Length: 291
Image 1 (cartoon, rainbow, N blue to C red):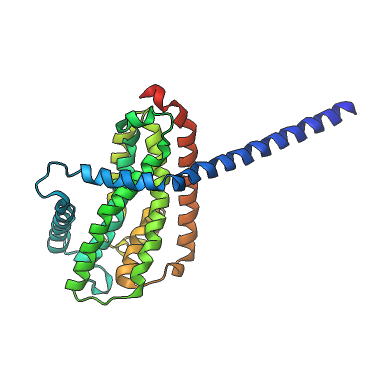
Image 2: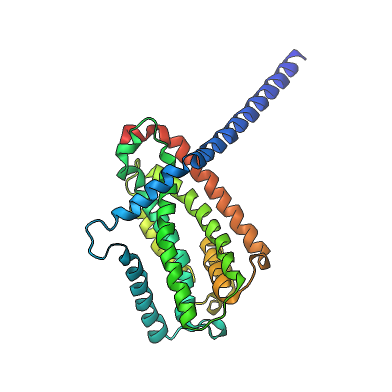
């Protein structure tokens, strides 16, 4: 009888300790994220500096942020519209349809790819005791959003040039931008934390992004695929964001029109966000030892 009582007591203690660890982990995670808001002025300042350093010594300077997307859009427009004669549904001007998809994908790719090496490239800051290294991927996001705004200006310019209608749905892109940032930050924390220990992470991220680039319907309409293939392609969370940009700027369709896609995206995005934060928090104390 005493053995049964002791076993029950030990089980209760283990259960209580397990719950205590989970509560501590949740509190720690919330504190980890809260520090981002406490460091907001430092984050904005460092993001501006990062954008500025990209054009140090350049004759045209910030003008390159306009030249690069315009050249890229022109090249892909010639290849896919003139060469392959790709035509999106509802006779939408291909250049606008293409630019809306590219705007969403390229800011995502820049954030994730840039985050991979951000810990290694800022080793001098990591070794400072008072510096909170987990803000570095956040700084990368802010810096990329500055250049992303240029891409959006190009998109708006093309919409005006094509004499397409304006709508309040344009503001809906802010929701999809937030979706993308949550997903990208989780991935950014994960790859930036792993890279100091596995230096191949940068190359792996580049390859995966390249595959994702062609697997996401940026230059081609997903409706051209068989229904079974469409289901698989829609598992890519960036499909939701790319399609959302087009529905905001072109098709004027509300995000709540796709409840199942929205639910699926947020389950995946929140899971990646939490896992990325936990990976970073776990590996953070060892950064200074391997850099």
